[in-house]
Length: 86
Image (cartoon, rainbow, N blue to C red; front, top):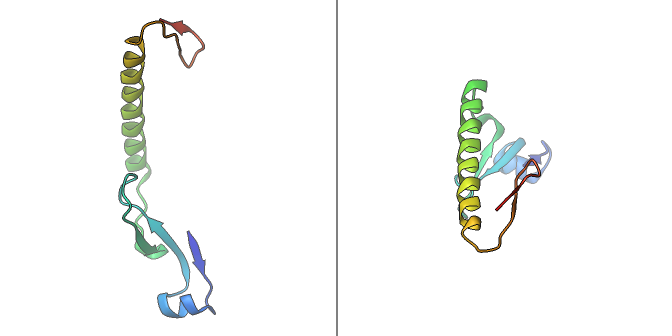
């Protein structure tokens, strides 16, 4: 995020206000530069749905990694609750 003051050269060229640098994908090097009024906020339910999907995806990835660790002989895995699994 960057703020272009109204009396700055950048504001003169690109308009004053907040500008956001947005990456369409977290694994991408591409980026876009957008003014505050160009960004559409998600509705609370849309945001909740996206976050729940991301959490579900990450939990699945954790389970896959735990399974892979179990395949390594002599490995002990500590769960989030502090229990030990072999």
